[in-house]
Length: 94
Image 1 (cartoon, rainbow, N blue to C red):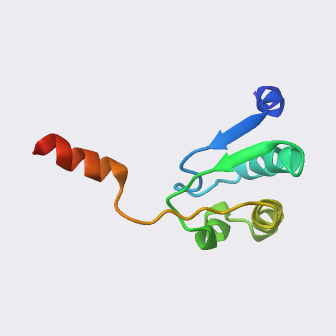
Image 2 (cartoon, rainbow, N blue to C red):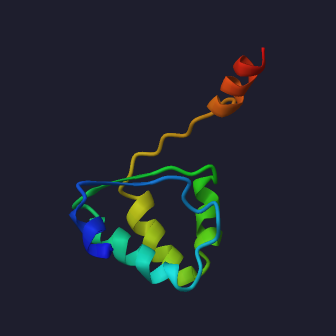
């Protein structure tokens, strides 16, 4: 499975870190981020603020490595306002 991910020109991680990363997932996450760092594109979306990703990753050493590669070489777009799902749901119930 990792070989398929490595071949992708653009990898999208949607709803990242909503659930804490467990011990089995940490090295896989680090491998993926390391492989893509400054070579391939990745989009990460999360409802969790970037400041909370460190705790969600869990292990301080892995969190440092992952976030160092993500945060310092990325463009961050923070969306504010009401959820589009909530807005659409209001329109449906009218």
